Amino acid sequence: MYVIFKFDKEFVFILIIFLIISFIETILFENQDIFNNYLLIDSFPLLLFIFIYGIEKIFSSSYNQSKERLILFQTKKKKIHNKIKIYLYIICILILNFIVYYITPKSFDEYYQINQFIPLIFFFINEKIIFKNEIYSHHILSMIIILIINLYVILILFNKINKISFFIYNILYGYCYSLCLSLVKFINTNYDISVFLIGFLFGLSQLILSINEINSFIDIIKNNFLYCLIMIFNYLIFDYLHFYVLKKYTPIHTKICEFFSLIVYWLYVGNYYISVVLIIIFNIISSMIYLEIIELNFCELNKNLKIKICNRGDYEMSIDSKEVNQSNSSFEQ
Image: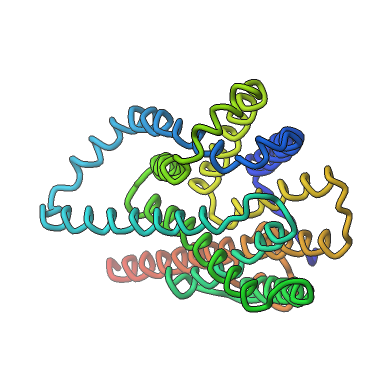
């Protein structure tokens, strides 16, 4: 077959949950008070991540202790150096999140919807330039599709809004958002820093930045207690899944989840624009090509898939081991 789909069952299940909670969120957003304070409401579930982080630490403590016993030659100087790097990474992540928080539109208008596509470009750029990962033919195809789509989006909106401000805003938002998530993934993978600890710090910083809105928000809670309670619980599930996907998969996987959530919103409010629907579909498809969820078995686009590289490595190792065994047997003779 020319096209093969390889879906992770757990990821498909997560996407289904995303669709459900996004539908509930969209209904709750009909309450204008909640709709206008969604960024502040989101900070409370993130603060609860400190408990998830604590549970995570308890279950991983025995593993960490045994792991530390194996590190016999790690010097104190190296530990201090690593700690400084970790603190610098965390500060950088919080600064990026601060920028994203301040420039994120306070409503889900067309301006907000369109800029959700832009970070994909920077995810791909960061992979090569900052994190030095190999880029192969299927990655390049995916990036070309994304670039064409986003140029099309920009050209359409340039007729409606200020060209310079729109360009600067999207570059800033896309770069900060993508780099923020990529760094969270990086320190989680390389330094074993929990994504839920970072999520808690996000919630704490968002609450501090919104402290002047607390009094008005308390009044909103009094008048809409049930709505706010459901929204906080809904956001808790949403944020947990978002960071869980980031931990287990990649930042691009989290963006696919957000695209599915965006589809729910558009369908609910009745925005059936063919161009927007096609933009979402092509963004999802190109992301799946990049992540090798979709395999393209033509024009050698499948040559450097991870599974193909692993198979070639296993084959070469088996050949080498056979040659070693043959040379040993001939030597013994």
